[in-house]
Length: 379
Image 1 (cartoon, rainbow, N blue to C red):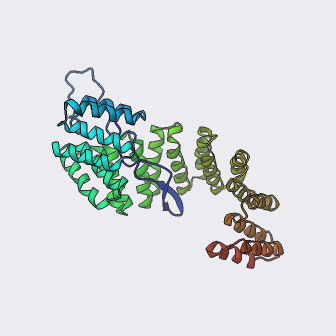
Image 2 (tube, rainbow, N blue to C red):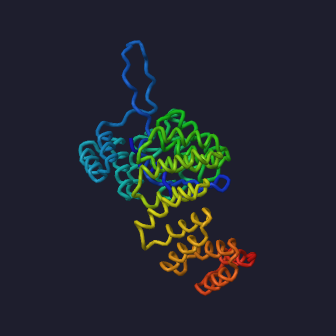
């Protein structure tokens, strides 16, 4: 069931593992934070464990189903209708807050959660949702932490509390605490791909590439289709971190097959394959994106890099010149062109390209890098 403003995966923010770019985003809604319901068993002697928290009012469950389908306003309308007859039911105020948070009405959502907790101070989903709101929508990490602690105290088997506190700890650079919390969340709900995704990044931040890859692999198994594209991208990067370039390339190619028209994904696929050491396979992806987006310099720049890695300096410079025609101030195109010319022993063209870069406004670290390449040329 969706829990408003629980941390969810994305490809937005970054942390590194040995230079490997990984991604993490806070502040969107988790697709499925709650443990799945127990399946019925044919043996009447079997006794099931109590659920980690008391089930919510059926009308709230209906609203959450609506929210899982993107029907946020309809869910809010349902909660408002129910509150006319039952204004003092905490569950309904919690459901109302969830709908409001999905609609981006954060302050109103916070008020709804506060009202829910006035009516029932021990309503764990509302405690977690309020803490999520404080941390990941309003940026109040310090104010959010006690809420997660309280929820864990009340319901020590409720996975979303550990998930959210783990993300908070990871973002606060408490890596050991993040690994512990996210591992607990994954233990309690091993079917949550979001938790495994963030756990992989916590292991990566802890410089445990093998554990990170294990978590990411489990996440991909849970969500192998297009909705798991971000999971597969993370797994591919972690395969590289574990010195498994061939497996990484296979994972990147599988990702491209899932999203052939997603140009940003294809660029990342090409870059990953290039990093894995196969420029010819990378060129296929850069060429596809350049053809689809003829007015964008980025695919041309990357295409040029791949051609250079394949030993075609002339072709590489042609692509970089094409990128500079689209954007004369594209720093990456300038720097790579100068580096390729210098590495090919074309010192005069490299010096001329450096002058052109400076004239276009080149400065800072990128200009210093280009200048060093030009000055190191031996032709």
